[in-house]
Amino acid sequence: RFRSIVESRIDEYSIAHVKKKRLIAIEIIEMIESLDPPGRFLIECPKGNNGGKNVVDYWVPADREKAVSKVCHRLREKRRETRSIA
Image (cartoon, rainbow, N blue to C red; front, top):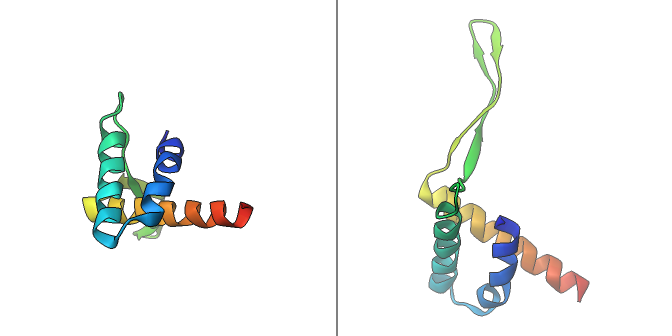
């Protein structure tokens, strides 16, 4: 669903000013979080070393700023992909 939501907002994002781009990203985050079940934005925690034992990677919820950053990054990537196809 994330991809389809992002694709539906690419045109608006491409012509928006910086402040509006951030608002678009926040709107996408709110849409994802309002799904049933709710979506989340996760970041990977690096492997650690616990007394000589390797600890496996794990995922934790991203804070709001990191989520906005991830959504904006995806919108920029998708916009580039769309341009290169056309």
